[in-house]
Image 1 (cartoon, rainbow, N blue to C red):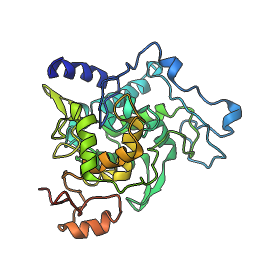
Image 2 (cartoon, rainbow, N blue to C red; image 1 turned 180 degrees about the horizontal axis):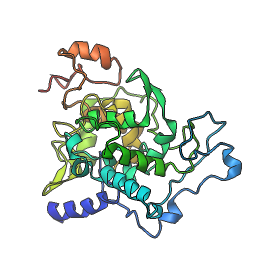
Image 3 (cartoon, one colour; image 1 turned 30 degrees about the horizontal axis):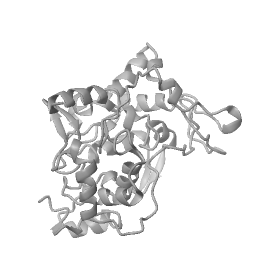
Image 4 (tube, rainbow, N blue to C red; image 1 turned 120 degrees about the horizontal axis):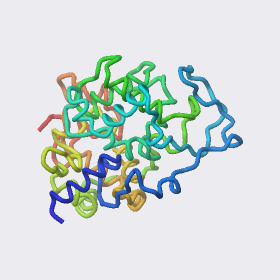
Length: 330
C-alpha cells in the first residue's frame, strides 16, 4: 500500500474520530460500525449511581459517588435543531481543528489527536469526563477556571496558537459539543475513564535510548523516523510528536507522566495496553526528549522559566537530554 493510499484511508478514519497523537498501528474502527452499540459501555443503572445528573444550566454541586461506567450519547442522536447545528459545528472543529478554527491554531494538530474517538474514548481524556468537573481550581493558572478557559488553554499550548475570544463561535461550539457529550453525567464527579490514568514509577529510571528502540519498532511506521508524522497532500494524517508542528512546552502532554499514561492506555492505535509500563515510560521520555515550540510563558531565560513553570521531575524543559539543552528552540 502506498503512503498516499494509506494517508487517504487514515484520513477517512480520522474524520470518524480515531486519529491519535502516537498512532502505531492501523487497527481502526469506524464510528458508525454496526457493532458499536455492543461494544459501548452501557449507561449506569439508577441503583449504581445515587448521584444527581446535570440539568441544563445547573450549577456545579457536590455528589455522593460516581457511576462505575458512563456512555456518552451516540453522535447520530445529535438533534436536528439550532442547538444541534452548533453541537455538530463543535464536533467538526474537534475533528479538524486546523481547518475549522484556523485563526487560532499554530501547528498541525487537531483536538482528536489527544482525545480519541472524537473525544469519546475512556482513558484518553474524553470530553464527557472533563465537562462536569468545571469550574475548577487549576494549579497551572492559579485560579478557578471555567470550562471555556480550559479550552482556551488548549489552543494556547496544545495547538501552539492563540486563545479564541470569550463567546466566540469556535469556543461556544466546542463547549456545546462537550456539554452534549456529558448528557446525563453527574456534576462534579470524576468518572472512571476520565483524564489519563497515571502509572506508578517504573522499576528502572526512564531511558531515552531504550525509548528510541521502542519508538523505532512500534511508532516510526506511522510517525516516521524524524517524528514528524505523515501527510497526504495538505492533510496531516499522523501527527508530529515533536518539532515546530507539535504541541509546545506549555502543553500538558510535554510532561512525561502524562504522555506515559496516554501511550500505555491507547498506543499502538487500536492496541492499547500492549506496551509494558517500562516501555511506555521509556518511549514517552524519548518523545519528550526532543525540542518543540517554546512555552508561551517564556521569561527570556530557560532556567528561570523552568523554575517558575516546570519545576517537576516529569518535565524535561530546561534539562539536558541526549546532549542537548531542551527549551532553547534549537
